[in-house]
Length: 123
Image (cartoon, rainbow, N blue to C red; front, side, top):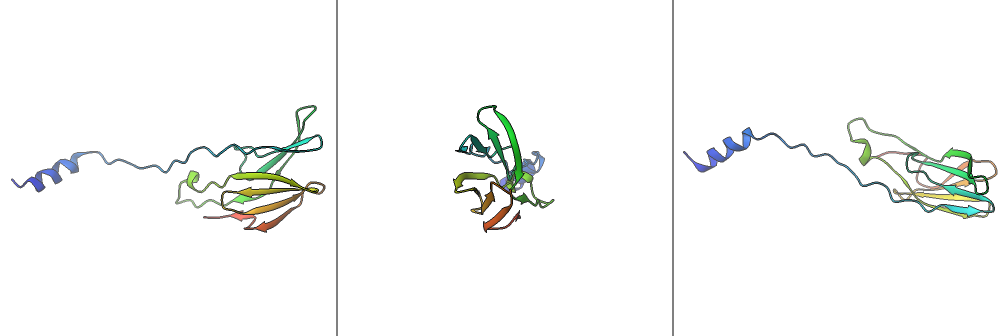
């Protein structure tokens, strides 16, 4: 019997390996402070920022800055878009994410302005 035929027959009996697109956990975003308030980007709340009172250690508010729209035929983890950098500028919080989108969150009104990118992140 031909070696190629034997090899093909043996390979066909092996279980198919499934590849899963798993990404590493997002890098921790360094919180930034302005006055007595610290601003954070929690990894478990994608696209959200939080304001924390540094004295009482209580959350003041949480705001969704952008939304990730998922495609059902793709794995969720490869579509995630995490915040990478927070920066305070005057009375605004500048938020950047993995797709290089940038947002300005007015700290008085909590209104979001898109500087670069879109409010809805899609693949």
